[in-house]
Length: 414
Image (tube, rainbow, N blue to C red; front, side, top):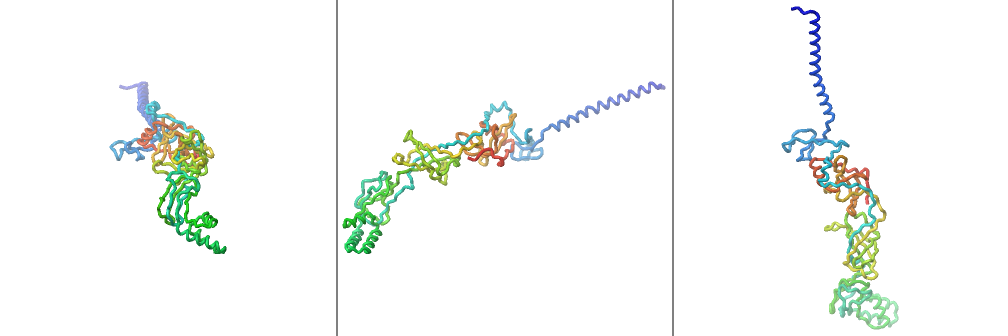
């Protein structure tokens, strides 16, 4: 059968239309799929590293199976705000976890530091009384350790036999009128340990005085009395020990975090329960070089005047130390600081329920607040409750702690 020209043209047109339609049907969906795949690849967040949740400290640069456990590595993605990994928690869960936030604030360092102390004797005001010559104790006055003495109070009477011959010779030379020999004899009496007052008494009275009354050179408390009636004294033997009471020491236990708050010569106010309403003023006389191992406190010595002898060793006192210059520092609640033994961390709260562990340098603590010297900025939010739970979660996920930047101080060292 022969086809006319019109029929042939119609068949060719239909074939072309079908080919175009088939090409569009095959090619168009494929091209759309490629575009969606490219868009998805562009929007996919970039992983910082991969890790095994059971060993978060070990990081891998590509996905795969964990060499430690038979499980796939987990990707850790960068936070969309700055490229530092952060812990993301649904804001609706923070209340259930007990998470509370506090604002990093700037304030003045406390001008007063409060501590406690105990009164003690002034160990610089001590007299040790020794026998300057051999003798025999003939009398001991009615005294015992703990008694309060006045200056020049008598302690004991001692017989010194060798003084008798030396004094007889001295008086004989005095009768001769030879000034040179008399001066030599007087010097000999001094070398035997005879007090100058007793030599003058012998010279004026012309009588031998072989007895010596031992007295206390200062007023204070009798700490030791080592002689009894009938004893024989040897040269250099300790007779008594007396501690003065004109001033006393106040031993203050200062927490080591407050070590930078005290200086020698600093003014101190002390209040004693035994003297209600009385405020005593003294000065820091010494800062001992070693802290106490049991309490980790710094030992500060304050000297207080004691004109009325009301201050007695063993009494307790509340002490206030005044700072010389107030300082401005950043403060966070002390409970917000996580101390690992090697560093101090805080959990910084960011927008969208993100939390980032940040290393900080801490200063002194005062009234439940800790000074931050480096690592934070004023106005930031830190976690003050529930931070240990967040820190544990961050450790499990292998989050990197923001390192401490010492180049830009955020507060002043107290």
